[in-house]
Length: 156
Image 1: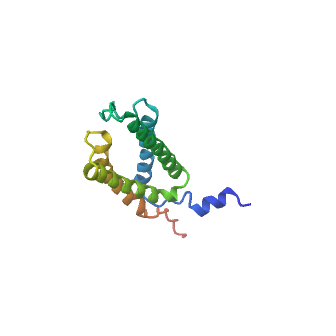
Image 2: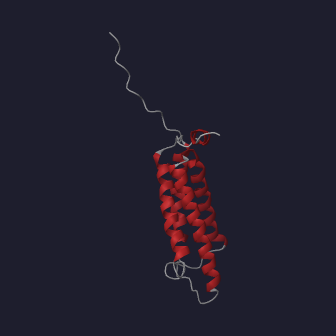
Image 3: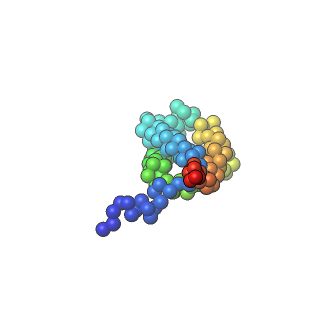
């Protein structure tokens, strides 16, 4: 049986070569996903009425079920964000790339394809998240220059 050190090496657990902003973005996304997932899953209205201004008088149960499902998905994504950021850092570029694609897709849905008729925070959040995720993806995929060790004094 192989030890856990072998798995860490195979997965490149601590071999992240991108800039610090890629890692920081992933940690912040984990925090944001924890917050919004908790609101959507655990509050009585899922944030639909109090935060987004969605009228729950018609099809309220359907809306609450969809919000709770979205909240569960966000909490699971937060777990992935934190696991990758703190344990499997080599996967940071892939997960940040996922967040970029998700933000672009969400913006297309919320602003054009199935435009959200209310001014929910998530609608505007996608417009902020796209450039942040793009910069984070760039930071996560570029290779940092190796740090220079001070050279030894010449023997003389």
